[in-house]
Image (cartoon, rainbow, N blue to C red; front, side, top):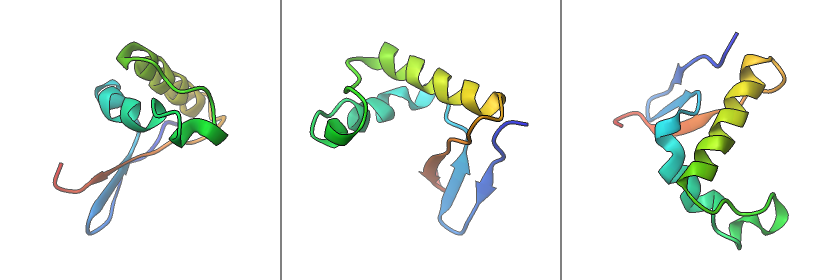
Length: 73
């Protein structure tokens, strides 16, 4: 089924995309942010692999993962 795109007045909730990798690396690569989560990501390639994992979960109807962005992006 995939992840539908939802719009609010200020936000867009959508499926994560490979282009999101640099932004994902900012927070998923920070050891302090990740201290209660998985190991920090080390580079953009690892962030892309992480996003592909999220997309595979959604494609298999295992879970839904959302990217949240400002509506003006």
